[in-house]
Image (cartoon, rainbow, N blue to C red; front, side, top):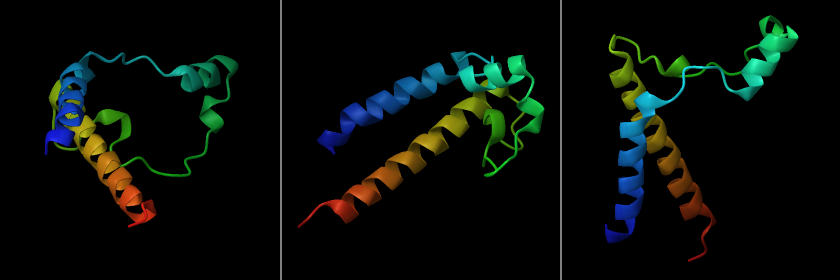
Length: 89
């Protein structure tokens, strides 16, 4: 558990700061809008929580924190599982 403390601290800090993230489009979205091809984009994979708007939660900051927490847990679990598969015993 001691090895996980820095990771848990980092996740906690990120979750607290996530509501302060910019709502402006990222670089790729900005370029697509500026050059006029954003509307032609095809959805190849539907996001589970699009735009960090958690279904049923009307408070924006809370929805962002929850989406970030779920995303962090899923990525950490996937990374841990992959590491377990790849590490030789």
